[in-house]
Image (cartoon, rainbow, N blue to C red; front, side):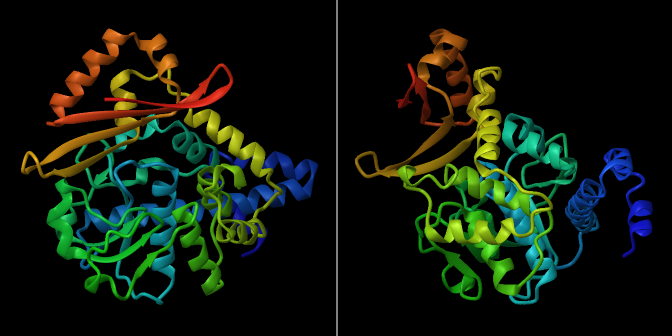
Amino acid sequence: MCILSLIFFFASSPHFFFSARLIKNKSFYYTSTLLFLVMSALINEFLRKCVVKVQAKAEGITVVMGNEGGDMDSIVGSIYLAYFFEHSRKYKIQNPVPAINFPLEDLPLRNDVNNFLKELGIEASNLITLVKSNEGCFCDINTAKLVLYDHNKLIDAQQCGCNNVIGVVDHHFDEQLYVDQTKDLRIIRTVGSASTLVAELYRDEDMTVPCPILLSAPIIQDTVNFEPAQKKVTPADVSVYEWLEKGFTEKIDPKALHKKLSKWKNDVLSLTVEQNLKRDYKNFNYDVHVLKKKLSTGISSVPCSYFEFEEAHTLDGIFNSCQKYYKDKDLESIIIAFAGKRNGVHSRQIVF
């Protein structure tokens, strides 16, 4: 495609005038920005097509679903995994669409994801959700095939979809579920980020990754910028990042990117207690043999120290909000896992 065609194609882009100014100054920056716009546009066009498929109730839709916690890895990785299936016939996945596993209106609670998508020009309004809400396009898992991404066990509320699971791509402990029905697509390995497994699929197929900086973000974030002391990074994470880096339109400092993403992610004190409980929430049902029943437990992760949290919201405020959330979710126990610095020292606290 020639430059004139590209200019015409992106004339409606909010970033276009920025690009047009650059051509007057430095052609390198203009070309770099133009390539960046092309790559972002590919993701946006794919997401728009996915929404059309779901709304039209296209036959044989396969939902690539992230986990209910919905962090950067879960959201971004599911988009790229579905995009891979769309452009590769290796696994013969029909009509793949990515989906988030929480209400779309809760996306702004995930500052790192929301801000980075905006920065890259990705239209988050086109994200499909598996939870009915006031925003976004809803997809019913009862009517679709499922590929579990960044988890390998459906939560209790989604057990109705067990027989629909046809694939798993994950980096968590293998629960040994849906084994027979996922024999053609079952990738479960211990790596720092599930997005590493997705990027490896592109690399193995020699497929171009659109907007590779976006796919690299969860890898940088989950491995804490490849810091060995954190004991999360693996050689596979480093190797695939180096491969992704070759596709960047301009040089990126991973340390600076990690710092920016972390600052966004950890900016939670401006949120209410309830918003923090919803921001990174997972539900588990534990077998309690003494009680001869399952204990419905909600676990919320909050990236700051408990002392900062109490200072911002007061003990009474935290208790009252937790009590309401506990009742609304019909839980029997709730756990809040805090992780942050106190007096310059990293600390973890658990409240239940």
